[in-house]
Image 1 (cartoon, rainbow, N blue to C red):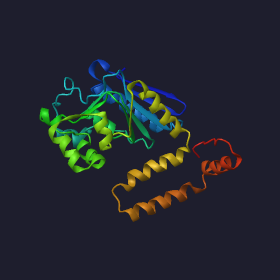
Image 2: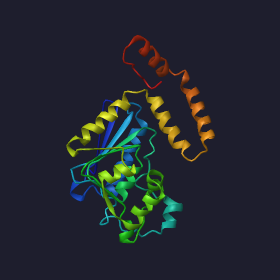
Image 3: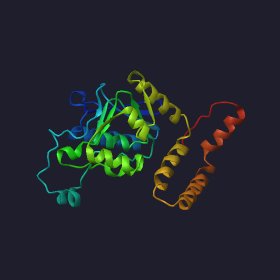
Length: 257
């Protein structure tokens, strides 16, 4: 299968599984990702997603240029007719997504990583947007998410040159939160996922919602929304359980209610 999916201890692991093609995204991979996001969205038992690539060479090198030539239909007929489904469609599952970047993250692969909430990279990982070198542009949010992540000047440098950077530079720019030895990558990402999954799921989802919702708002408006969400969570079973567990010096048992 182009994408593997498994669930353990409230953590869904999604693996791009085309190592022979550097985990490039072809139509089958795109369909597989969409199905994974649907399962994550509909399964309340899943609290966190861990996304990575098979093998040790690449997370994903983006679109498979051998299988994604322009379709016969005009773009207008797709955009305003059947719809222009992209490889990020359905990814907004409302639950934290951690990306373990195990090698090259180029083009659409880097866009996929930037759409995740937390990025952890192997020390062997490499990052770049080479689209301008083949007469195209990042079309999956790269021109928008990268400047918001690293700032305009550094983003323009990467986007306009098509240069590839190493994991140390990606860490300096803030593209990733952490760099670890390649052999430790999956274990480190799983540990982070486990710590998040152990927290109150409604609170975790609320935090993700507020961070995304507030990014484009004035601070005062965003803080008002934060206060409202705090009030919504105030009387939940999990919030009461958290306080009882603290008083009783035990681990809380959260149920997402």
